[in-house]
Length: 456
Image (cartoon, rainbow, N blue to C red; front, side, top):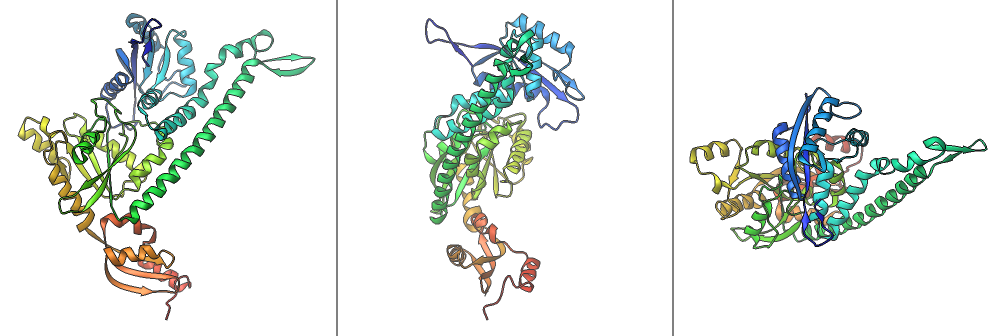
């Protein structure tokens, strides 16, 4: 959001004023003060100078302006005092709220919300065609319901007497503002449709790529975590990759996959993914479906946590919620407590680390604890078995072969349409066999109704 001067290419940062709203009984993992601090970091990442902030506690948002009229007047005075050009709300504003707030501020400043700010950051950092498509889709879907604000000056000119419609000979006519608005909406809907088609091609390509990986029987570990937790640093340490790393939120946008050699000679693929954040815009979750499937299709997750952050526990919880949202919370997961090299007090470090169950403490920067992490990962992927009962139709012959090659069979029963196997499989094949899981009562019901019949 920085602007170039006409004389040269030097970037001039715009001043931003932050506004938080603490809604009673609204679930958030961060306090309003901590959330505003995070919003300040987001603004800095977007190239803005934060010149002030304030917040208000409410039982519920105001219908028209989200915050109270007194608070609006207070912010107007602070905006003038600080020469702010942008007011950023930490909460997502409806199109009506945004429109009414800009009216109250007399068009002296632009009003945006946290979602618009994150979308702007993603647009700045996306570099691959896939990333650019995903961000563009999210931006258009965000803007579509907010188009009215862009054309209110035309709507006021429409028709006789400043109304939206005029009449000639008793026939109602649409004013030019409304016509332009309809054209603009139609164009954006067309663009959204085209972007979704393009992204579906990307999704299909990724699906074929994942299928090839599964056929190679090389398991995949996905790095997940709160933004700026150190995922890219860990990827670079484990794979000698050169992924961009910076002390910024959302420094890396596009997923990167590299091969990793594990201690006992096994190999796996390690995929870095976009960082999560509290109040992650729903438009981004939908638009980034193709990328997020890299997480939901992984065999194991490394949930990287910045153990030095004062809100480490809250950030962990926020990521867990997002994993549930994308249906990836059932995947085996290792909590990786990063940046232990910055914990100077051993007693404090031990207390903090003990608050996370079954976690591995590391420093991705200097490599401390990384070898232990790889040993734990190898044990999870290759030496941990889970008991299952599966019914696999004969047309899925490759899956049957995997059970014979990689699993431990206790009992096998050939039916007319498939094979029933009871035994154990390595944890990394959980996703492969999950579509074929059967409970004993389901099996008995299917046999009674003739859906599964013995060959003999």
